[in-house]
Amino acid sequence: MANAVARRSRTKARSRVRKRRVDYYDFNLLAAVILLTCFGLVMLYSASAYEGQTKFGDDMYFFGKQAIISIAAILVAVIFSRIDYHYLMKVATLAFGVSLLLMVLVVTPLGVEANGSRRWLKLGVQFQPSEIAKIAVIIFLPYMILKMGRQVNTTKGVLILLAVGCSQAVFAKVFTDNLSTALIIGGISVVMVFLVYPKVKPFFIAGGIAGGAAAMFVLYLSLTIDSSSSFRIRRILVWLRPEENAADGGYQVMQGLYAIGSGGIFGKGLGNSVQKISTIPEAQNDMIFTVICEELGIFGGVLILLLFGYMLYRLFFIAQNAPDMYGSLVVSGIFVHMSLQVILNICVVLNIIPTTGVTLPFVSYGGTSVLFLMAEIGIALSVSRRIRFQQDDAEKTAETGETA
Image 1: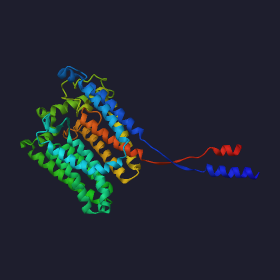
Image 2 (image 1 turned 180 degrees about the vertical axis):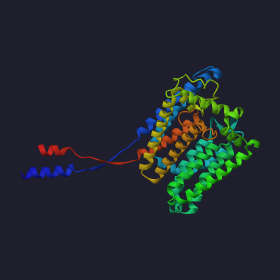
Image 3 (image 1 turned 135 degrees about the horizontal axis):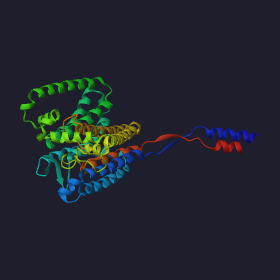
């Protein structure tokens, strides 16, 4: 009798909830990115087959190059995910300085001009230094925040952080003439500082001032835009009156809107886009979302937006559960980068904002973009591997004890 009572008491003690550490790896994020990449490759072939055949005699020209780079990029993401992200703190300063140097080299003979813009650098391989600048800001600003400690809570500390982040944005604008990248880098910097600064009021005040300045700028443009010769101001004019400025880029915008409108609910069918056949120049790049909507309809457009939404949700989950502030801020920077790029691309396609030249992540054609975006996903996966959950482990020995 005494032995039975003792066994039952031991069984009850063991059956109490016991916590054990569980390793984690966000396979959901990896799966979402792979699905986006595969979906992008299918739509890239559909959007570029005609142009590849007419220009290069190979309908697989763009698809083949992008497929090889995408496979390599996924491998890069997996490799990065196996590396402890804390090593980034050791190379953050170097990466920041190198990214500034590479952007300066764009204006030297090493720079390469394509599609009327000098944004590429050729050092054995051709790439855009501005893509490196985005990663450099994402890994360097959190490192600075940790180094500054409590100084981050002061106005001086905030101004220093914003100045450092915006220096990358200024270099991107001045040396690569890439305003869209400058805006993205600036957005990443502001959000990171916002996350660590305890006071919200200054950001709302700054936002109000910026909004007022933007309104005054738009009012000024409405009075002087017709007589201006500035490239960017003319681009705004194209945005405001695309039908009257077809020769300056409005034609592409209008055809993109026609493509989206003609797709209906379920589209014309995969491969049946009409607008992509020379009507939308280089549809496989920034305007690929129009082809998706024309061939797959609103259903296809919503589907890809849901995939992006799920990817961003997984990044938010990792940032929220990261084991330390550095990991949380780095993944937050990646989240901001991805979301800004998706929002800007969709808004351009829908003519909500002027043309910016921002690609749709993992979908648009572009080797540099896919490679560095995948590197960021690899970093986020590396952070996810350091997440440790406390799992309830109720032992089944209760039944064994009762039957013993």
